[in-house]
Amino acid sequence: MLKIRTSSPRLQARTERPPSRIAIIGGGFTGALLAKLLVDRGLRDIEEVWVFEAREHLGCGLAYDGRDADVRLNVAAHRMRAIPGAPTAFLDWLHTSGTLTVDPQAVTPEGVFARRRDFGRFMQKQLAPHLDSGAIRHVRETVRALDREKDQWRITGANGASVLADVVILATGHPPASRPSAFDRLDPLTAARVTDVQTPHALSGISQTDSILIVGCGLTALDALSQLKGLGHAGKVTLLSRSGLLPRPHAGGGFSAFGDFRGPDLNSALKLLVKVRATISEAEANGIPWQSVFDALRLHAQELWQHLPVLERQKFLRRLRRWYDVHRYRMPPQAAAVLETGLETGRITLEQGDLTSIGRDGSDLVVKIRNSTGHSELRCSRILLATGPDFRDYAAHQRFLLAMHQKGLIQSDPHGLGLTCDTAGRALTVAGTPNSSLFVAGPPARPAFGELTGVPEIANQAATMVDRIIRSCARDTRTILISQTDPTAD
Ligand SMILES: Cc1cc2nc3c(=O)[nH]c(=O)nc-3n(C[C@H](O)[C@H](O)[C@H](O)COP(=O)(O)OP(=O)(O)OC[C@H]3O[C@@H](n4cnc5c(N)ncnc54)[C@H](O)[C@@H]3O)c2cc1C
Image 1 (cartoon, protein in one colour):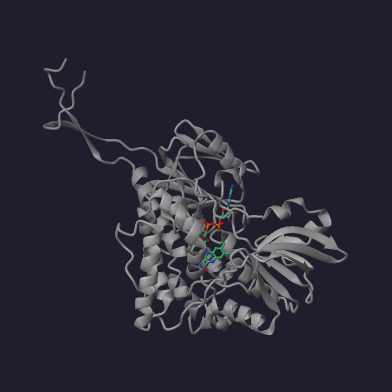
Image 2 (cartoon, helix red, strand yellow):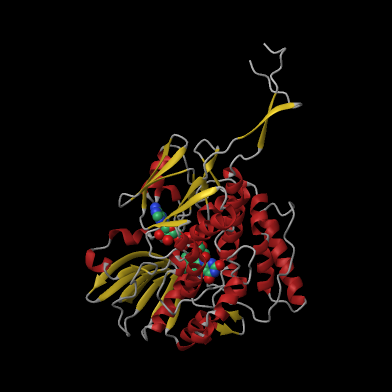
């Protein structure tokens, strides 16, 4: 038997394995940024980065792919810290590319609120050099299967592409919108007048005088209002939601984040609520808007989430989440103006309640709503679904994910936030073991982070994940010390 001694090395050897190949499934903002960072930082150890994404351009995904000029970022450009290490890159690009000259309406007293498609263009510029050099390979196919093959993963696309990779990152982003059960039983003529606003051409065929019901009251619904205005729509619009809560506006004045939400003491939903309220009172006493308190809360949100025991997480999601969301996801000033004018003139109305059924009467759609005072009926010509993505049972929303779940490789998290993973983003098997060659990035990794929807949080996660992957792919160029064979060894 050979014994290894650490002293008196006799022989030095170098072992090297081939550079690794990384595959990313999904080329929205998350997948594209990961690909860029892997190439920027890992050139020596990573051979190629393959990104599977059916869309024409990488970096756009659901949020930034639109051709629509009327939908805007809900975050001011200086806060879109999209590129780790270059926090003002997007704002700088808006200036140098001439985008703000073409779109002067982006500049508001609350900051620069650019068009979402322009953020998509910015991301494309970031990726272009690596696509041109071949370091990033864009496979324009939807992944249909991901299988283990010896120590690697085989990724199979819908049109036959097949790639072997050492590490796979699931960056599959937002699932389709949740559909109230009343939408399940529609006859074809009614169904044709119901569209999910996040699908292409959702607003096509709407006439200027059509009366519209928008189901949902969040930022997606406000996008729809802005798009309708852009189309010259002048008919009635009703916004319906269970909570009746609308996203809040941004504050002007360039205030910094206010409040400190760090520390393990904030370990219950109630303590958190009490602390937020107290901090808002303190801020307001100092002439600082509540928005600054939520900015601080967001900065510490991941740490807070990680300190909350499971039951408190459930309480937060059940009781505080809607309230948190409307303060955290604020409306761009341009959308706020559309809403305000519409409410003032009576063209837009708000309804609170549950949509229970949809029928037809001549050319009208007839919608029944249950609310605290009983039932009401509403007539409209079109229904737009703006309920936002449904993350419940994430592992079941795509066939290849479901197949992986059935093999025990991934699992949906019980809170309905995405896929279970650890804080390094490693996917957890059904048995709870982290898999160091399978990662979850962006919104579906929220179970481990709580807050992981906005660009800055995703960018942070991507940077940390990339560094970890590069370390694990580092080719072993260490000098290996092979000691003298111990003559006494047997
Ligand atoms: C409408 C909207 C507006 C937003 N506005 C802002 C904002 O103003 N500021 C901000 O900070 N954040 C905003 N966000 C949040 C944030 O930017 C997004 O969460 C972020 O873009 C997530 O990107 P993603 O790539 O993870 O997901 P997605 O954008 O959903 O992209 C996922 C991509 O994966 C692809 N994909 C999925 N399954 C497969 C498969 N099987 N094979 C191949 N490809 C696959 C899809 O085609 C898609 O392109 C917004 C989000 C939305 C939805």
